[in-house]
Amino acid sequence: MTRIVHLAYGCYAWVALLTIVITLCLFLAVVPGLERRRRLARGAARLFFFAIGSPVRVEGSAIEPHYPCVVVANHSSYLDGIILTAALPAGFTYLIKHQMSRMPIAGFLLRRLGSAFVDRDDRHDRHRTARALFSLATRGSALGFFPEGTFDKSPGLKAFHLGAFSAAARAKLPVVPVVIHGARWKLPSGRFLPRPGPLIVHVCEAVRLPTDRSAQALMARTRRAMLEHLGEPDLAPDAGYMPE
Image (cartoon, rainbow, N blue to C red):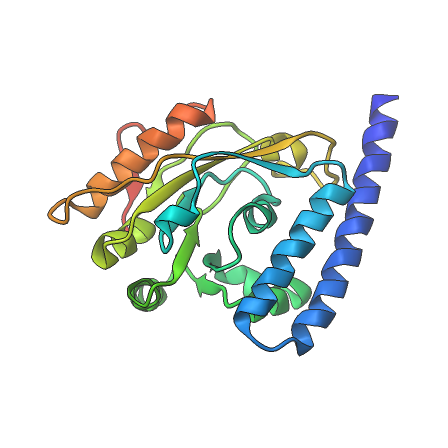
């Protein structure tokens, strides 16, 4: 019976997602102004999770007092980007892997929302993206990252890429660690149909360091804060980060 319930729920969740995403794309195609389009996307993300019985509950600290800032979150599911869109204020620019830009619907949606794309296998593209993100940060844009860069079904916090922390350190912006709970259960790597279950976003206290401290130190403190609330093992206790 449980398998039948999960199958029915998963199919319904996909129908709800496709319906909301296609409708959102139609609006994004004609609505002027990046801020308006991002507010629409936030509303659509919240509507989706409400429709499937998993409204995103946000707990912990408030992000607004630290705005603009750099938000970094753990990555464990295909749903993480939508979860952050629903949970965070609408003004964030997200760093997305370049493969997503080639997907017909998702690529259009992400471009209309002003996302930044990066090819982590291309050194020149990484440097170009880093310069663009630093420029955004110094102009007061809020940035959102998944510093692990990828995910799989195994629990644990992977090594971080340094780019988010370099941008924050150079632009003198606070880093706000965010921990997503429930996404790995709901739609993990290798699974096609979502399962029912709650989603919680815990916003940690902002991390600020003296201006003479390095991006590595900023990253290390952020990582410790995330591990305190994640409840999963540290998969890179020695490496700590992956150089950009």
